[in-house]
Image (cartoon, rainbow, N blue to C red; front, side, top):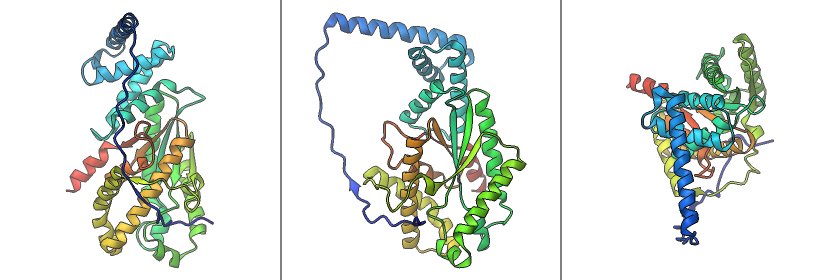
Length: 329
């Protein structure tokens, strides 16, 4: 039996040392010039192809990004049709995300995903759902799960739009770990039983909405918190946790009456759980793209708490979250 709200006493700050400067071996001048000439020729060819395939987007910053996709596609020997679809898919994804929330490394991963997919190896849109039924039992939600229905409708639309360009399926991660207000819920019901009821209701909603190519996976099935090797948290990781805590505390104080200390403890546990989940998703779900559809936008970065900085799990913080936040303000 796993622990739903895991303690992580071994969280450490990992100070990274500066890398040593390595002087590369000399390359013969003639060979170096030949490689440089080939690179210039490939870039020029990619530029010409970009202007032909994407005439409306042949300007910065789009042109440089589309050229990168074309270069990756040419390296894999893809035809123009696949590269065209990959480029249009990227432009669609780009428009989904809040501006400046995608790192260069995340973009590169998305470009590689775009040119690597096939009907047998599709894009995998990943999203999470909180245990809405558990919150409803203690008066913090509706037993008919309207928020889950709305979220599933939204992710179905995103999947359908993605599928217009590239083969796409959906994985819904049911967050049965690090549950908000856990003690109150535990005293009000049998949590395991209600989790199964919640998941069954999600399946019923999926059938009623006629959503296809979708599966539900419990978060606890991706990893077992007490047994999971917990990497040290870097200085940058602690900064992400602090930013997410500040973005959540006011709501937690208002909804649950939590103190600063109680909220910080929960938010740290939640961050580590999200980090381990992101790490597990990256390792087990090919071509995974996380759709962050949560009011607390700052939590989106926590999915990459433990992934390599140069190979992150792409996290799309939907731009309509920011629009809704501004509307409320």
